[in-house]
Length: 339
Ligand SMILES: Cc1cc2nc3c(=O)[nH]c(=O)nc-3n(C[C@H](O)[C@H](O)[C@H](O)COP(=O)(O)O)c2cc1C
Image (cartoon, rainbow, N blue to C red; front, side, top):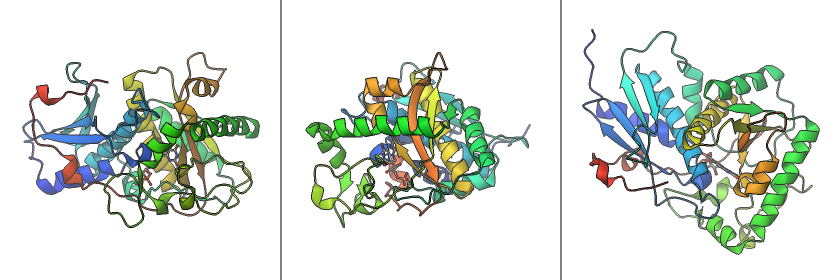
């Protein structure tokens, strides 16, 4: 029996740095971590104060974001020679505790997550909202992305041209509704950081993308309420490469699995030299979300659209320092969020 080595501060810092590099809706970074050093367990909590009441009333996108951070924790644990044992929603009395990651030893030789390319991709992945080149992504890479989603407990559907156009039309309809909804537009704008601001959350103007000159690509218009910030239009790729991430159920644990699958897909794509961006607008209107479900599957719950291809890298977005996302040990009663 091997004695367990305690987690030192540098190891914990590097685990958390990987976790917070995950994508999150509007860069809300809706996570908090708590270390239980005696049991070598990292608790992953949601943050009630960084939610989007209008765009994400059920907290589904928040769970996707936290799931993505959990996937990064898995990869970082393996990078540190630890075997991550993940439990989702481990304690029904603590609804804000979304996952625990026990950092067991030793690492199994066959560990599914022992892929150094994926760990390195964590720091390199950024959302790219710029036009892509339109060069087709080879089928074996698409197959790897699909397998990644499956391995993490979700499914990825890559539609043909007609299916892609349909998803873009539905997204454009959602985008138009968001535009016509002043409170939603204001909610989105509240997560855009003023130029020069040194905010740890939210999105810098530099990370926003231009509108599509051809009007085909319905990227989210983050600055709809402030047209002075809008960038000049550019021509986007004619044949958009999209994937629909979906799950067979739509419970809280499915959203956390979908978030892990999302990040596994994004890192697989990044490791293969692709750029990615996300389209969530259609998921914010129940009827449009339902319209993206695949009719050939009896139970298909759409979670997110992923745009992928070759093109320019995205800009960096800020992160709250990893240690500020780690809260000191607190009794279970402190966990007050209900979701
Ligand atoms: C669940 C979820 C939904 C998102 N929806 C959108 C979206 O609709 N449009 C968009 O441009 N980016 C979207 N993003 C990307 C975030 O804005 C991005 O992850 C965040 O700003 C951090 O930047 P990074 O991905 O470059 O690290 C989404 C991310 C997540 C996790």
